[in-house]
Structure formats: structure tokens, C-alpha cells
Image 1 (tube, rainbow, N blue to C red):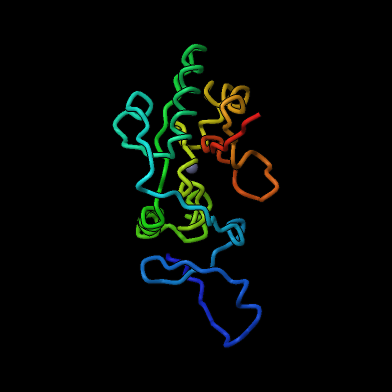
Image 2: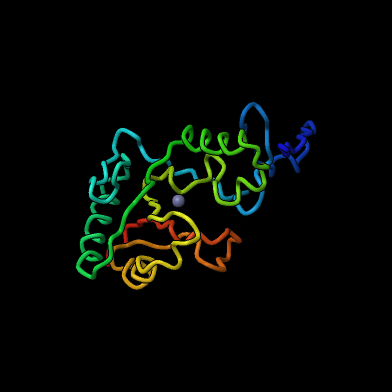
Length: 186
Ligand SMILES: [Zn+2]
């Protein structure tokens, strides 16, 4: 069952200004919490991205900002020295890619509110910045792999932060596999 939230647009209704919507498969959905009011305006320039090296990504072709690429390469080398293999299976995702990803989930019959728990609506994913990466396995099991403990101890040394940690103040579901790079010159 597809849960389409009916959208009634009241003319000049001030409350409407706070409503955020996305169009998926031709249907308008209201963006629910925790995404609502967390639209990401900083999109990467797709022509200025760098390809992550194949030894980190396997068969995937993954692009991130050049600074993110350099940082993740350095971090993976340090992890390797500690016997940890960091693998990445997602980096930059355009608005259109994120839209198709979510539309694909809806087409399998997933209700919208279920699908958007872990797949951000287009325009709301940190992946659009080119500075977010997903480590493998990019699912709840990541919390149990040694790479996760390693990232928690050492990620900050390479300017990587867990975006949606357990019990985060924003109310986002825990995504232990999802980390973002932020310039952190000391
Ligand atoms: Zn992610």
C-alpha cells in the first residue's frame, strides 16, 4: 500500500510556508520529521568531484569532493595499518539519484513513511554535499564490525564525524555506517 499524504494547499495560508514537499513518482509527499526543516542547501558541483580509489570501493564507482577523497584515503591507510579494511559503497548522490532511489523503494510497495526512515528525501541527504560516505556493510550491522569501533576512535583524526549517532538530538535514526567529512584544521 502506498501511503500518499493528501496535500491541500490553502491560498496564502501562512502555515503552508512551513510545509515542505517532495514529488516522487508523480505524487507530492509532505516531508516528515526528522528531515523536515533539515533540507541541505549545499550541493556539490558534480563536475568538481574526485573518484575514490578502487581499492576502497570494489566494483562501485564512487565520487566525493577532492578533500573528502584525500581524507578517506589517508584514513583507510591508517585503518589498514591497524588491520581494519574500510570499504565505501556510497559517496556523492545527486538530487536526481536520491529521487530515483526513493522512488524505487516506493515502487516495491514500501510505504513512504517507512522508506524515508533510512533513505532521505531528495534534497535532504548529506550525500548531495559530496562529503558523506557510507561504509560497508552500510546497514545496521555496521555497529558490530571492528571498523565502526575504529572509526569512533580515529575518525575525528581525519575530520570524519558520524552524522546520525545513536540518540542524536535531531531525532534521526541511527546510521552507524554514514560519516561525513568536514574540514577540521586545527
Ligand atoms: Zn549515507
